[in-house]
View (tube, rainbow, N blue to C red):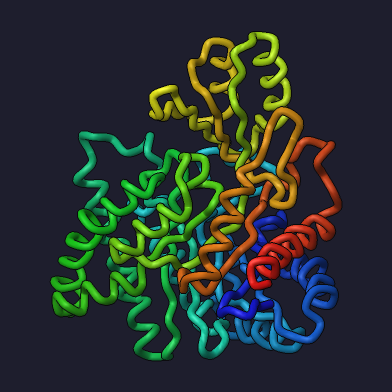
Length: 406
């Protein structure tokens, strides 16, 4: 489904449980086909496909991706972006910081990503770029100061090898695939500032050197392929948790020469912290159902001087709510896009609206992806059936895009 502008709107199938290819394909039949019939009967509809390591191994054989391509074409669906962030299990089990394993210091992450690229190169429609979202290099608490150089060297070596593979795919097939690094709270990359620092001060010189010395690129070509093939997955929820204005953030990334491979449309929870102790206790009671045992729900607490205090999860933040000096909390919990108020809690829906305004005014990206993956762990009062939930998300985004065009 497309807007009047060159924007491709999709939803990410990490919404659906399932690690094997059989489970993933079953979810496409069960959910993607009805959505296509209802929401885009006369035009192709894009799917943001999530493939685990296990599922990707099934599709590596030519019969696998050929059968998938034929099925997509036959049903008016297409795949131009993959979610390559969660490597293994992502639903109905404790995920927490394991979502970052394996990180970019490992060969497992690199070989998995190149495998995804080989699959995606066979699926991307003509004239469209393809993108693979990936982790923010590593989980910051694992980034030991004494091991920094070793870890950074390993990560950049693996990134350079991946970029060489993507450049080779482009040379041999004409298909342009970019790696979309996804900053998130407590990732090595979690703010605009440290994303720019990593890209310009760490990745470019280190990966460039590897490409020149080990992959046969000239210095000029190495810089070009790095700028082309390593981009940012701008998850609106993640940057909103860090209290970043999307317009300023995207402008700064663009001015630094960093491209936006996709914008993921997702909303975080937020709340002003009241002074009254009874009101704080009531606020804590409304936050508590969101402190699930499956995912990390990092919290950034804005202090009176504007600085941020960060908590690795919602539960430890709640332990401090009675005494905190913070004026506002924001929590990494992907709540529905189409709801702004949750009693004493609100969502960062305004940041999504601002981002959608921007992407229609400027050529920021061609891919918009709805990525609310937490339906199974939402408090019961917020749960709808999954088909209706996905449809409402997409309809809300379409409505925002239509309002801006009008």
